[in-house]
Image 1 (tube, rainbow, N blue to C red):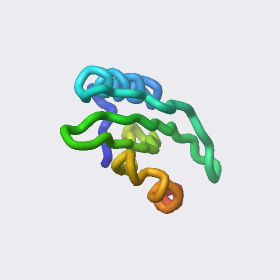
Image 2 (cartoon, helix red, strand yellow):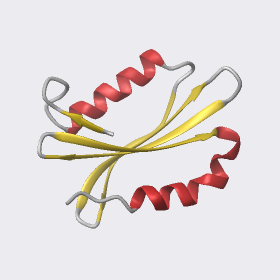
Image 3 (tube, rainbow, N blue to C red):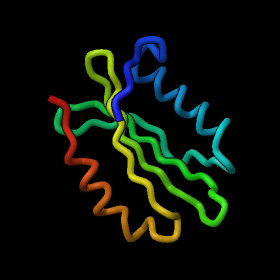
Length: 101
């Protein structure tokens, strides 16, 4: 997804902070597993990994958040906790293939 930062946050740090607040306020049994800044191919991005409870199962979401020219670009992998280890390698490879031009 693409989010215009205008009216939402001043920069990527502010947007990440806002996302973490929303996760903890509006998801069932939230757990932020990882939240840190990374670099790949000269691009700075933020990796956010969290889990949340659904009625019948637990989800894990992995997000790469990248900012450029007043917008945040978000790529998300969503898996059931029970199959996350099976999906992680392929999902991360797909997510790492995204770049900003």
